[in-house]
Length: 320
Image (cartoon, rainbow, N blue to C red):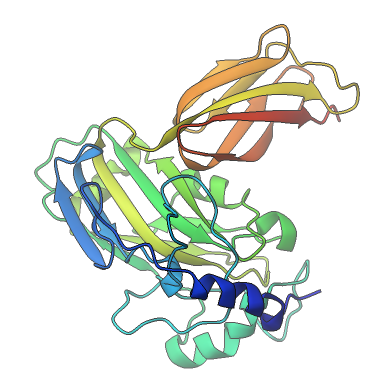
């Protein structure tokens, strides 16, 4: 059943009544600015951000930090993109494969009611996000991290299959995470990914164009992004937590010994005789934990990592 606008109206109005959390920080500059370039921060040699840090225009509750790893409260929808905001940011987007003539494979969300509005205004349901690169052409790049504040991705629920592109190239490292996310609410969350070396050359060009789309399924799975932040030659993580967990067999409830646990680009571990593992210095936000063990199929789990906390989790492997 499709979730309607009115089902979240009261929750959204409550969020709008909370004070906004305005900031100007050494890591991100003025959060109200829609484009910020900073050099030699504690996070990276170069930081480039597009999009203001304002929760799609709804603002943050008092004391809330979007980099803490905590999810936002639900907000209302639809909403109008503010004048001057970059295409693809602070706006509802929908898969290009969606149409009113074809049904959705697994129902749909309230964001899909924006289809006619998007087609009338943009003649498209999803738009590329342009990230200008400044001063990267002459840099010796040894690493790149991308941080995105995403909203209402629900592939496991609505059977969407998102693809991500950087300058027209498939970025599987990003879409793998996006297709595991379930953000019922709608709510926002921070994700952090390491860009593999074969993509570094794209960031030496004048711009990087990020496109997220589902071109095949026809799913009615709307989504949004608040900001995109790029760290060139990242230094120490400033917002991180520890993933401490246990892997058990779903059927027998017994520990799985020797399972390989991997948090994409940010650490790996092997479970001990009690099925336990620990991975430190995991970026705060939504993490994808991939688990591989003998006699089990590979499985992935969505886990929230809260800054400066020990995040205890139990993961169940399906033996079938």
